[in-house]
Length: 345
Image 1: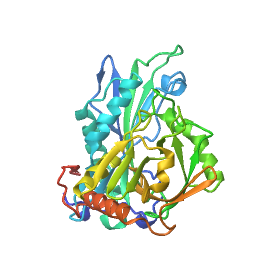
Image 2: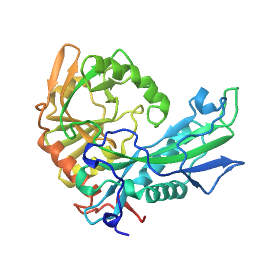
Image 3: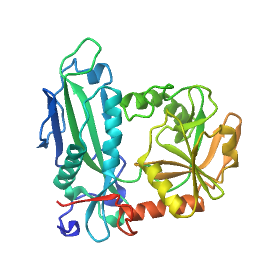
């Protein structure tokens, strides 16, 4: 079915926030007696949950974030959902949640997007359908330990740009007063505790008028870890650089951009990055599902300011990477890596 011929939801597609907009359906799978259910479509936005659920008390929950798009020829596609499935499995392993098989995860994505197809924004709007898979420990348990039952739920909501200005540079602040995660903790997993731990640092930055903060490694306070919302990348000459650390959440966007950078003839270098080296970078970006690339105009580090571009225009390499990836997502550039999963409403 051509999604362009489908009657779309009555929304102002060009003015969508990056927030929750009610859609028609979500999908739910239950884990009981050692197996997952076959999934049921629901229109209920609420979850019945026991007050003693381990997800509430002990943080036994993990989630993902990915997007679906309408292409220029009217198809609906999801971007690299297999990678999200693998990352969720890693998170589940770490916090003792039974793995969600790839086939179940992909089934959930197909079904929830198809059920909400009228909420997939038209390709020319720059908006997308954000998909949020979430798995939580349910049932009553007071003693510390993993739950015996689980709920895997996936909902979708149309979103605009993460930052209202879209692909525009922002200022960043290095926060040394707080840590996002601990060495050998769960920093490389997408679990709620990391984001709760990062709230204070983010608000600290916002109070100083910095939209985004940058964390250093929690052990030595010397090496780049990641931004509050996304991975760090740097451009230095013809090299695409990303930090290597066990406390960084592996970004699927970062992984994809590195492939594109290699195709553009750039060297790809994943290694420890000393904060003192960052001043020599030509461009810096914060990369992730929500914004793809947020160009960083400058980074405030103690009493110094590292500047990479103006407040209005991103650097040339970041711009080219951003355009290439977003055009793959909307079918305007060849999907030579088979990153797009087509979904039939």
